[in-house]
Length: 81
Image 1 (cartoon, rainbow, N blue to C red):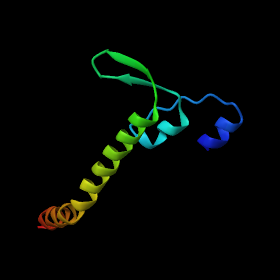
Image 2 (cartoon, one colour; image 1 turned 90 degrees about the vertical axis):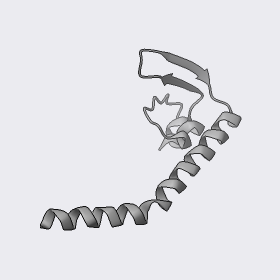
Image 3 (cartoon, helix red, strand yellow; image 1 turned 135 degrees about the horizontal axis):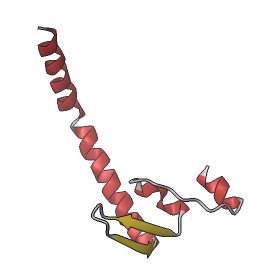
Image 4 (cartoon, one colour; image 1 turned 90 degrees about the horizontal axis):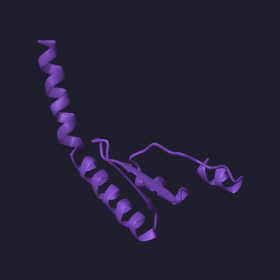
């Protein structure tokens, strides 16, 4: 969808925490949650670093899934008592 819109010359504004979408945009507006902000041009070096961080975060979440599933089962069992 992003690539098609870009091919058509459509400007996109995306609200996301997903660095994998950086490749479809030229600029990034970072909001810090305290009324501060930073406007920057995206470059491939920063994009690659962000994607590497996203991959590491996803790998951490995946590795925690068995423990999370086990805890969910424990909570469900306790709620049935």
